[in-house]
Image 1 (tube, one colour):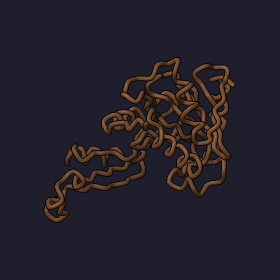
Image 2: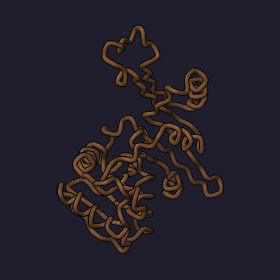
Image 3: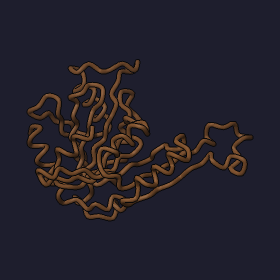
Length: 235
């Protein structure tokens, strides 16, 4: 197994995906979207892990939870599995690791979240809202989620939804009118645009390639389409 083999495998999966991302738990095994997670790796002191130490850190963290890690022909690419879960870990960037999985979300996400919660060396990337919006603008906006709750930062006596009418904003919109809605929100109050999700499509007319993607607030990118290259270009 090498990067080319992985890319071919992931692209084959992309072509069989059910694009109803919101209903992923209802689709048959193997038909859920491709999922790519960006993870931030660091030492206990918060420093970047040395590239040569990344494989050992990954193996130690994963195997602690029964996730078996195997080497590939590429020294910065690893396969990991446990039961129905299969993950490719790409540690080429020693600070930001990438995890690709074709497994259904109901089995892979609890395991991955436990791995992150319990490991002192790993965290989700948590992309800021302006980066999420910038990535969406590179394609065709197809939806967004805004989840802004200022009351969690207010002293308890001030947490009054009547007097703080703009303190809580929760909106989810899907469809081709997403960008028009977003422009209205930006005019209304840019501060409330704390994205929980942005959805967008990209295409390459020269190669008849297309991809639909949904990026959430902790760095999970769901994808369906026919081009792994377009998917990987997002980051």
